[in-house]
Image: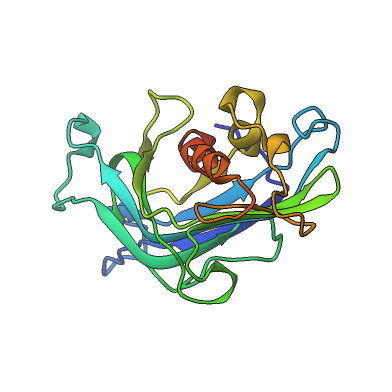
Length: 239
């Protein structure tokens, strides 16, 4: 499957490997593989941004856990290894619009045995420091030239599938890449039902605030953006 080339990205390296000793120099069959996991977000097109009226400059999500969910019903998952759902413990801060940004705790590693994984599960959680203090998701930019900031402290668990519902992540001893794709157009586009241009600066301080606790009158919009996050994320692999 051909990957969409990301314009901006941040990455987690998820390494899983098993070294088998042998008296021979020939390669042995691997029972697990290295899977590089990457989080990406593409910019809005001119039409999606309402011809430049909406400009995003920052988009971050804080995760406390990432879980690879094993498809127990798939015959390809037959293995000598006792396979269970594999979890990466965070927190992980996805800085999606920073080309040099990366997830925290890059040293986290897991072994992905040869098996079929049908979904990747995420648990969002508010951060404990920096710009993500008490925030699980943060988005900033400007609308019609007026600065805006959206944040939410959502503490939720949700599963993410491939864009093709019939596709799974198959680990069969070969190194591969998996991309977590945040489709900003789905998050803010017409089909999402979210109209960011309707956000208002209710207190007239020159800045639009969108959050569960804002004083600008955008709390319902904050709820809509939170709900839209679920449909804006899909998986892709490098097949």
